Length: 234
Image (cartoon, rainbow, N blue to C red; front, side):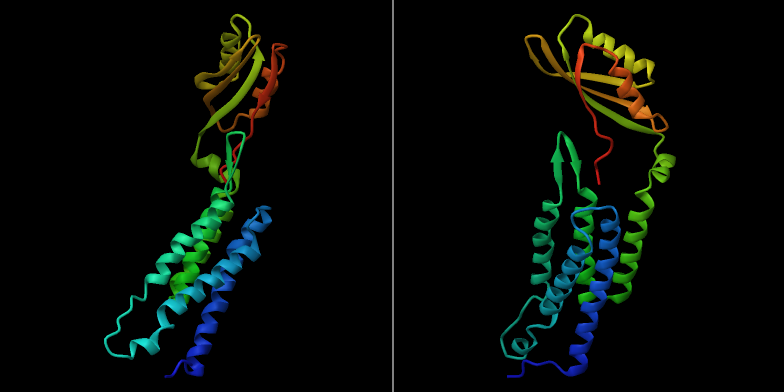
C-alpha cells in the first residue's frame, strides 16, 4: 500500500503551509503592535495548524479511497477546525468591570484559521486576498479618527458610587446634561445605608472628551468613586 505522495506534491503541500504561516504572521503583526495577547506567534501557529489539518483532511486518506467499498467525507476534519478554534478565540476575550476586551483578537484568530484552511485546500488567491483585506481593515479602523467620521455619536457609560442623599440622582443628571450627555438612563445597582451605587448610560458627540465629564462629576463631595473605561471592544 503506497502512503508517500510524489515529491512535487509534497513540495506543493509545504508551500501551502509556508504561505499560510506568512498570512497568519501578517494578521498577528497588527495584533502585536496593539500589544494584544495573541500576536504573531499565535496567529502563525493557528494558520500552520489549520493548513495542515486541511491538507490531511483533503489528501491524507487517498490510499484508503483506492480500496473498494470505502467512501470518506473530506470535509469532516475541516468542520472540526471551525469548532475547535473557537476555544482559542474564547481564551482571548476578557471581561473586566463590565468592560469587554479581546473581541477583535478572537475574531482575528478565527479568521486566521479560515485563511489557513483556504490555503491548505490550495485556494491561494482567496487566502492571500483575505489576509490583505483583514489586515487593512484592522489597521484602518483601529484609528479613532476614522471611526469618529462614521460614528458621530457614541455611548457613554459610567458607574458611580455616592453617599445616599436626597436629590443625589437629580444632581448627577443635571450635571451630565450640562456636559451635553443625551438620552440619559440611570439604573440603581445597590443601596445600602448611606451608600448608593448606580449605572449611567447615555449618548455623547464623539468630539466630546469623556475625561472632562468625569472630572466635572468629581467636584461633588458626595461622589466617592467613579468607574469609567473608554472603549474596550477590541
